Length: 291
Ligand SMILES: C[C@](O)(CO)[C@H](O)COP(=O)(O)OP(=O)(O)OC[C@H]1O[C@@H](n2ccc(N)nc2=O)[C@H](O)[C@@H]1O
Ligand SMILES: Nc1ncnc2c1ncn2[C@@H]1O[C@H](COP(=O)(O)OP(=O)(O)OP(=O)(O)O)[C@@H](O)[C@H]1O
Image (tube, rainbow, N blue to C red; front, side, top):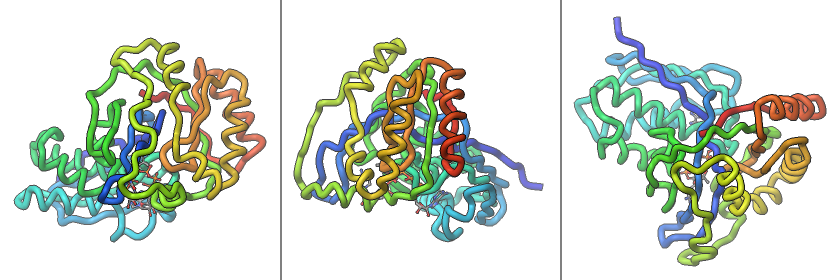
């Protein structure tokens, strides 16, 4: 019988997302402080079986065809880097909203690479694993170690892991899918243009909570205005989160439409979550701890 390994694929939250320009290859250059939730999707691997994927869970249908699933794309990229490596049968339990700016597919792909690395006794720091992550998608490298850190370049340049204090958050997705590519296109930045270079607030490795929140407030998500045009409900989500009692900061994650707010404690966050859920029962709302 094959040995089954399991990994969690958490949500990625862009606490800040500064788009500082557009490179000659068409990709946008970013400065982003990324953190991770504790819940998310679950991926398991029966190592040694032929490569396959089964997906179930509440958002399985929304995640598209099996053939286009980033788990299989990551596994194929891994196999190119390590042609003699054991692959296996993946089982994904999909819970995160899809095309939501919280890197669900990227986190699943990174979990697949962690599982394949474990099954083959390879470190996730190995260049082959990192190369497979880069080849799979811009957000996959940062999801590989799932540690809070600065992300730069088009996602391939990572700062050192940061020991952020746990941030109590509420994440809200109003159910309007947004494709990353479409939101970038709407920003309409010319190839080769540098917009707002280097004004990201300084984030130090052991920042106390209040200093971190103050620094985050000086940051922004540059994709928010374009995403709000494409999904006007986002304006409501941000206004509701900003006005929630105890909210210290409200912002969109990634290319949207998921937004988050930070609170001083779990009780305040959970109370806000319940009130928003009563008013908007169709929205996906989760309290979480980010770091
Ligand atoms: C916006 C972020 O969510 C911030 O974390 C990510 O940069 C997006 O990462 P991702 O979803 O993994 O992106 P990919 O699937 O690699 O790219 C989707 C499309 O988004 C655009 N794209 C992506 C990342 C980037 N830095 N610049 C871009 O212009 C490209 O048109 C690309 O074809
Ligand atoms: N395992 C997967 N989970 C979710 N979506 C997937 C997966 N594999 C492929 N996809 C496809 O990837 C696209 C983006 O989905 P995803 O949920 O990763 O977006 P996102 O949260 O906006 O990502 P990011 O924050 O990295 O931009 C969707 O169109 C979906 O069909």
